[in-house]
Image (cartoon, rainbow, N blue to C red; front, top):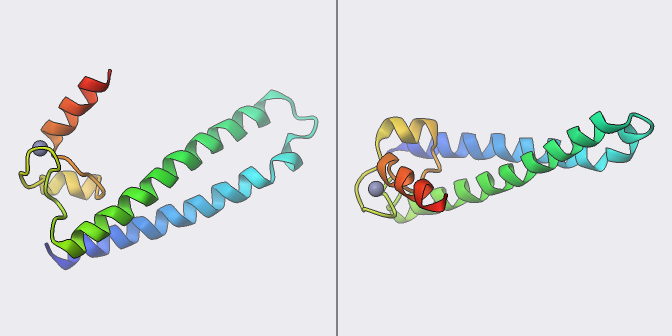
Length: 110
Ligand SMILES: [Zn+2]
């Protein structure tokens, strides 16, 4: 564990939360830009809704990652117990599994 991890997670969390607010606002404004504009506005609204759900998940995962950091279990794969690769954490700081395990879990979901 090092301070870079914390900084990265806090930065990601701040960005995700800002994104969440932006999306919530856009979804609230639905009535405004939906008027008489037909399908494109509705499609856009649905895209925003999907994004909102994805961003909510991300915020949740980042919070958990920060808790794990506190507990000293951050960066350890939840499935095999190995350290998660540093490159992977740089790209996906909220990752709970190493790349190999993530692939196995993904495959088993299909
Ligand atoms: Zn693993």
